[in-house]
Length: 174
Length: 116
Ligand SMILES: [Cu+2]
Image (tube, rainbow over all chains, first blue to last red; front, side, top):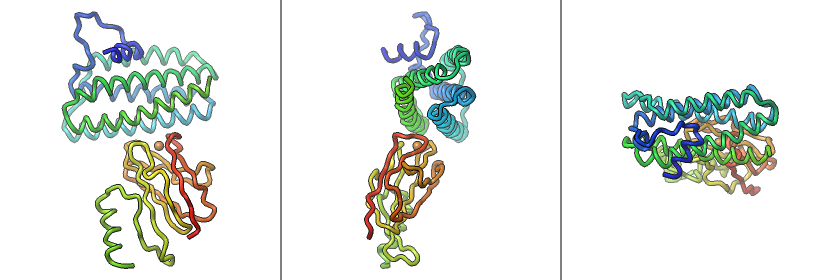
């Protein structure tokens, strides 16, 4: 529960009133798939912003990897949903993620040079940490469909590596 | 080359099971082997490979994410391997023995090259 709360804050979620039972662990498979798709696309947007803003070779390489990997995971998710004949369902968490991303993109867009690079790297670290917490603590234990669960387990391994990569990038930029 | 050996090669490929090695005959070089490195869960398996000059090393990517096998000194490169794709190099006396994934730099592998 502690991890979930921390994740919620890092993702920029507005904290719902206690009476509202909006808990990521309560989402169904199709809502979880929607969150993952949105979360992938947000990181792809951050990466495109970084490619437009940075002149640092490491940061550029990292952003290119984010686009390549998150697009691959999204494509696999779309293929699986098509095979299952299902469509992802919009939900409170997807919406909160998108709202949080708008704020962060606004903030990052105002920065230049090494200031941008460090802020982008720190956000990538925090974002992957938060999303990995969600996937590991709230999503994987609750996904019912075995194929969807397997896909999330693969994605989780990739995103944990991204988190480690982002941590190294932050260290190098400081 | 004896039949049982060939069948073992065929099975190793046909079943797609992780195999650290496969003994295959190569035209003109009767002792040359093809070694298979499986890329699974963002790791090269096996990470250390004993090879001889004239052997071929083949990487097969089983991950969702694209990877490369790239010499640490940039002297050779499989280029991008998407899921299900493979790439190979031939080992020479000059082959640089350490490599990594250009997309995920913490993925590393190496060869121990003998002149056999
Ligand atoms: Cu890689």
